[in-house]
Image 1 (cartoon, rainbow, N blue to C red):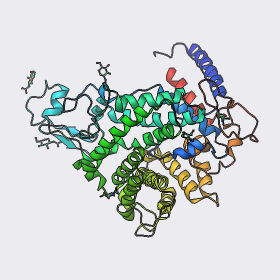
Image 2 (cartoon, protein in one colour; image 1 turned 180 degrees about the vertical axis):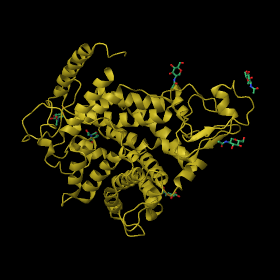
Image 3 (cartoon, rainbow, N blue to C red; image 1 turned 90 degrees about the horizontal axis):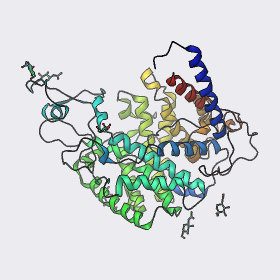
Image 4 (tube, protein in one colour; image 1 turned 60 degrees about the vertical axis):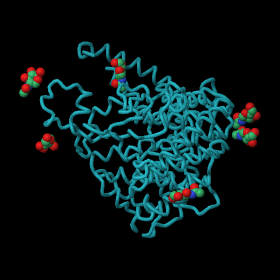
Length: 480
Ligand SMILES: *[C@@H]1O[C@H](CO)[C@@H](O)[C@H](O)[C@H]1NC(C)=O
Ligand SMILES: *[C@@H]1O[C@H](CO)[C@@H](O)[C@H](O)[C@H]1NC(C)=O
Ligand SMILES: *[C@@H]1O[C@H](CO)[C@@H](O)[C@H](O)[C@H]1NC(C)=O
Ligand SMILES: *[C@@H]1O[C@H](CO)[C@@H](O)[C@H](O)[C@H]1NC(C)=O
Ligand SMILES: *[C@@H]1O[C@H](CO)[C@@H](O)[C@H](O)[C@H]1NC(C)=O
Ligand SMILES: *[C@@H]1O[C@H](CO)[C@@H](O)[C@H](O)[C@H]1NC(C)=O
């Protein structure tokens, strides 16, 4: 907008805009800004039992609001991209290796090369850490991330709705059908062209591309909630179709060269490979298979991933160690949670020590002592918080160390979605604070009831959380 000319008008508009937004938000109650956590496995039985920890209303509101926000972006399909994979099949999943750039010096006079010709004519070279922005021309990877979050949060919102069918289950089912199952829009069950390196000759995906589908773990959590919760929208026919798709994809993960190489990676890539594969065994209802997969991870990679002091040497060696420590921790926790779910009476991986004598807790304790050092890393600070919550829930937090850490770093953490499924975890008394008590918990047509509302909490003050207020200010500024 050209602006500057009429500050009074702009200010008036801003005031009115903010008034309406504040009024709207006060009714809805505060929530946290939408975040895509690196990975997690959310136990469907815990979600369906509905006995959430105390003071989880803010987290439930956040989940419902994220479910709604994500649903507005869907459905997603690999067939929406304008660039087709070398197979020529629209149903092929494809992403481009993010750090690879064309070098056209040997390609003759390139002035008139169309973008598509550059992709197949010029050799591509790696410039580590430098993102090639033309990767955004295709977005299967970003779409899949949105899909996986949308399925997870809509499925949890459905469970909160205490009904056999809801707008939330309809959303989740629609999104899964569109991406995986419907004839017109389905994705073929392979990642042969994930993180593909462009250039002349044979263009193939890379092993690192297998990471693109790590969100299968979230999708599995969501679908198990729908299946075990007897959602009438997730029909036996769809369940059978999804099982068939998943079995084909499991075969790809267990036989394709790129997949096997990714599975052999010693660092977070290996950890995430096992997240996916183990979750998919749960999805086809093979708990022994899932346990076998996580056992393989804990017998192999895990053993050397954490040193005696808790450092993760392979992640520390990367360009952004704080981020990679948190990232691999999320994947380790996810493998351990899948293992617990698959065989609750088996050995507990959370107690398992690496060759250096450390556990997942040792790694987390090291990570929280090692602050994000560069300004680049500051933007990753929050990535560690779900892991802090998970370690508090799995190992206990009698001293209050983890709750205090979270309270200091993120004063509204009980409004994080992860607060719901990382119980028990103290809310540090924050749920009673005015900023976290929010709107009415009465169910409405579009918003499921808030279960286990803490009846002796604070009066229903209708104020706004600081995070939400920041969001409002940011969007108001954008309007100017
Ligand atoms: C581009 O490729 C040419 C050879 O064709 C090579 O001499 C040159 O160093 C490359 N440029 C970069 C930036 O890598
Ligand atoms: C490259 O091709 C363009 C367009 O055909 C032409 O104008 C230009 O002179 C050529 N450059 C060279 C160095 O041949
Ligand atoms: C694909 O092409 C259509 C039509 O030109 C365009 O609107 C759309 O933004 C393109 N999609 C992407 C991801 O570039
Ligand atoms: C869930 O729904 C059932 C049947 O509609 C009802 O009996 C039950 O009280 C509800 N539970 C909650 C927690 O709302
Ligand atoms: C789903 O249906 C099965 C079989 O009828 C039943 O045992 C189970 O309790 C139901 N689960 C829920 C969450 O309603
Ligand atoms: C367990 O995993 C190994 C690979 O680590 C595989 O060779 C074996 O077939 C699996 N066994 C079962 C029962 O799934």
